[in-house]
Length: 85
Image (cartoon, rainbow, N blue to C red):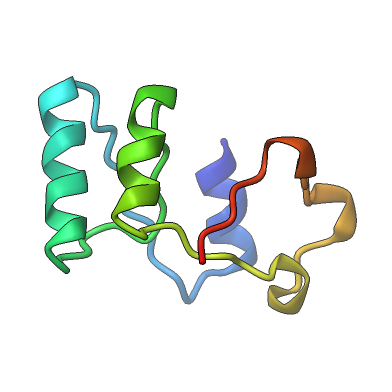
């Protein structure tokens, strides 16, 4: 549903959705990213993986408003935010 809506709004961007379900696959993705291989533009991590991802300095701050995302859709939880610097 979300991918269809995204593709309709941004037909010039191609979405290749791949669910990485197993712990081994998720670990492989993190290992690839820490070695500089980025096959994914967007990922979701489990709570157990957050410290590994932060230690590898993988998160990037995204300024959603500058990308045209409505303020209504932006959720900023400063209480649970991390300093990635």
